Image (cartoon, rainbow, N blue to C red):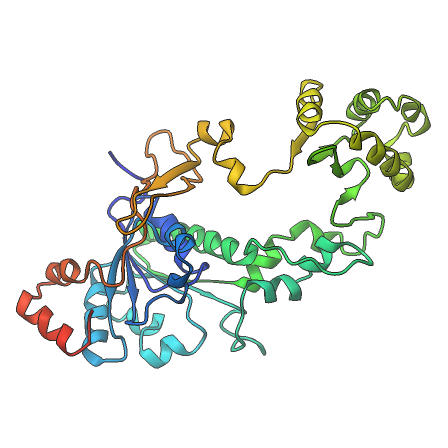
Length: 382
């Protein structure tokens, strides 16, 4: 079976989420990905099951990049690879002599992906960065809370995940360019850029004070409502949907009282108050089923654990189970994309242990078992 990135070799120096998940996306597209770690390992290994989601489908090499021989091994791997992926803080790769300018001397066609917090230049580029900080600094938390309300922290690491996806996308475009020209290049993205890209519309509408948004939604016709047992989100801003939901909630008078989108927007608080009372007396599943039959866009707010039994998620192959050698199997998300001719490569095993494939990888470089043992004794590899 062929895959989109068959034959592409990736050296994954990335960690945490933004770096590691990029490598996993490439592995699930068919690339041969080697996760390179120091003896201390990726800092997120301690997180257990989530670490497997960010690092499945990879091989693992433990390499001391502070030792000259460790660097030499990396250079040999670079010469035989297509992509290097890293998310070190600016300056670290230069100190270790594993930056793009250095590595391209060993392979001019290398695609080098760098994911940082703030980019490689500018007044804050050396500052430490992590997802909640980006959420705060780019307005995501304030926007989520709504005008006049406290900021809301989104537990999903939105800038980390989006940076990983942007990096994988950038690498794919760079590989396409190299296929046509033979040229390697540096591909950069950062958490600040990814958090900004997530809010493209918000940046455009920054001066639009007509939207009275809060953590429930942006208007009475586009928000969450609490039913007798769960929360449900509805979207009924257009006129046909407005008529249907008013009839469903036995609020037919509202159809003529607020006949236009503008009138509904101007009276959003009054409408929300009546909708809140009407929904509170109804069961969520009944509301969801009834409104969908009417053609309205709606959905119950569910726990993540419930998604494992969701028929639609199962039908799109969005669920998988990883076989774990030292613990119970883990159920997690499957491939986020489908190809009709070159399907993705979904691993059925979890993330590799530190240095799990060190002997195999070094053997392919020509190192003998004796030489590998010597490197291991000197703590150059593990």
